[in-house]
Image 1 (cartoon, rainbow, N blue to C red):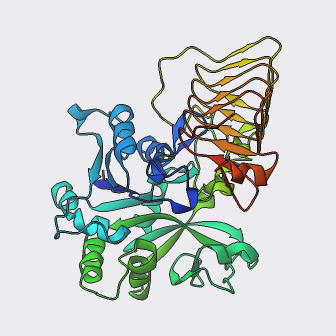
Image 2: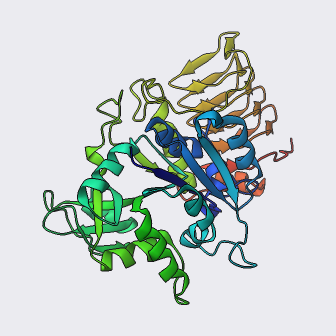
Length: 405
């Protein structure tokens, strides 16, 4: 069996998700009522059998570290671990200068484990993936690095880092950052490969690349922006087509699902993907579970003629005589009589008062919406109250925000 070390890059600040990231790192942002964003990457690694996992943290990491410590306890007797690794300044008195520098400053992890291969995953995407199949493809290719690529319409590929392959459809000729004219695929000219931000490296090659990058004063020390293009130029890079990945229990509709929830609008849209009768992304796949920490709370309760449609309502929540439609209600929430919640995401311990209306909104933890209050109905009024409104018209109320009556 090959020796694999997994590294999850979880130091992201997530400015585009403000105010959800005002008090927490992006990978710690709650998702789907019960989860944190990092749970998806960690579940994919653990389900694939990769149980030596280092999570590199930096920005406002307290809630992320606590979540990992409470949730991700593997079997220490078998040498298994998921360990948060804060910035340690091992290479001098400086914080991480980029994702590549984060690994470079944590080189002791590689020296201690002596892996043959290193899996490097991002911490803030929503998807299922059997990482062991990608590692097997990497070994078979003989490449120094394999980059996971997802097929996207060519006309939309300008938004991503794009992979241009050789005629074999596997070797990477160029790695292009948001190109104006994205290259098509060999077998599908109207599609392009977008980088998923997931990589498999031959360990020796990664160490050499990180040393070279660290010595380059012009580098941004970024995995996607510097390390991958360097290794592509060396002619030893391959792409792994996400479409090849077979995850047990996947449905045809969610088989190739991958979402970068880096903006408020994409975060909101990804939640709507969860709640339909036949969801675009199925959280109920017990053959490839998404693991998380579950609170000791009773089941959700609906009383006094509550009407709940196409929604997820989490443990400890009560909907009393209210209407909840196409929404996610987090842990220990309460929606009072005659209130309406529509196409919205309520995080933990949100209280919606009597007769209140919440529409196309995201409300962070510990917010109390007063009786009769209107959220997401008048964007000018929302801004006047100090709420954020996204480009797509989603109203966001930050953690613990006090709403005046």
